[in-house]
Length: 585
Ligand code: ADP
Ligand code: MG
Ligand code: ZN
Image 1 (tube, helix red, strand yellow):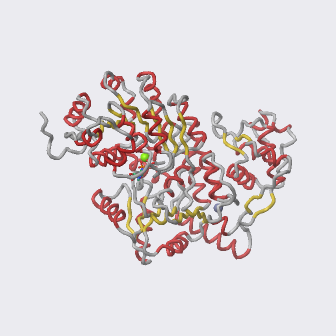
Image 2: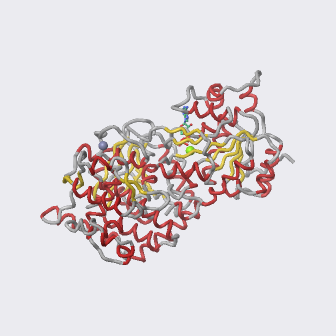
Image 3: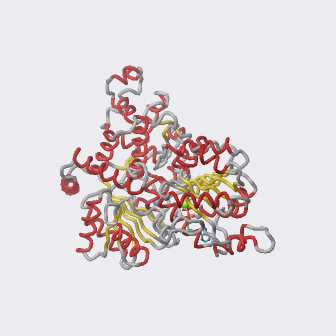
């Protein structure tokens, strides 16, 4: 019964033996570089790819933290081809799995996926191919990978390796936590001799530690590379007249393509329509659109060179268009990780590209409300608040944006980059060294166990249940910051975070702790500059006020109604993408 149903070839394994012949030739040996050239048609490994490949081929465990587009897939695909047996790949999204399997089959690699989207017959065919040893790579969802049934199925087979792709899903600190990833440490106890390789483009220290701990990879070799994308220039502006601001930004890119991200589907539709009226060729893309139309818009974007794709976050995963010249955000992304991923779609060809974001207080208020009123557990809410603060820190920094982004990923950038907006046009700052010392003292004196909200209460001298219970009302630092409003202190903490002077503690969720660099501030060896608050009088203020009014109009029916609408929308995006809701929230 080797006949396959005519229209169900999607996830069928390749039947012929092309790959074996191509790979092993007459010698029966397979050298990674040889595989790279003959199977993939590439001439050389990039960056540290070969180091990872050799380490895993030799049977070692690995954690691979390379940015998007660096070429992580080859780091497990080639070892799987070089080693005996089938490589098992854990991947979170069925759509991504399908794309990868399809691409592999085109190369003559015997790949298949096993997931809930298969018909019974399809699943049987994949299982047969697997037990016949006729697969090089098998993609599975985490839910399946942790089951006893799956362990039994592959129990007495040769397994080349386990690859855990998008490994940040194991961590609440990552941008798309998937509880099912938590059980994957079972692979180690069940298959002790099989090398495991975890891969992600999210490398902030919390997520990194979580991956190593939760996946029981403490013995693994960690491969990291800089997360800097030197050809991307960053710009973040305060929202005033968002559409005009966007139009001005887009006017720099006549003849090239890019992406404009919006939070809601309605805004995607409206913005695309408006841009067309303004003479910018734009197409909308969101998960609520008719599938045929949506695919057509995606194809147009991939092929054409002068097109603006206005999209929700539903667009982008697995998209590989090298010449995206710009990415614009009309709304705050979900986190620094999401911002990095979304902006990272620009300039994959290495040519100069620009990313731009407009943000306003309305965004912040709305996001806080989504967190506070969302149904998540308190623990997750605290993580979400810390993530929002980290993102705001980058928006508000008076320093170099690139430095702030890289600091978030635990990476130091030597000096200012010179071509982000704050480097090109330094923002007005004030010498906040004394304020910074007070803020850092509040962190230190209260035992590095509290989040920014409580620390602000301590500094401005708010008597409440918490400041009393912990005895903070009796501390010298209590009320030491009365001279500044709470709002300023909140911004100060975010900027201290972005400057790498404090960090959020991992285990205590959102508690601020001192970084070693804070010592120099205490000793007054290092000055700290904060961004000047927005003007509150004069012409600038009137413009800002007008902007705020327009923003409120943007948020018509604001409050819960809007919130509920966004929620419903995001739930349906999640359903469409077959991911849990928090992935798109
Ligand atoms: P990541 O998973 O790190 O985001 P991918 O594995 O999807 O990146 O690779 C991104 C693109 O780079 C793919 O089109 C891939 O074929 C290409 N690529 C990877 N390694 C090489 C290489 N050594 N030479 C040329 N292209 C490569
Ligand atoms: Mg990848
Ligand atoms: Zn800079």
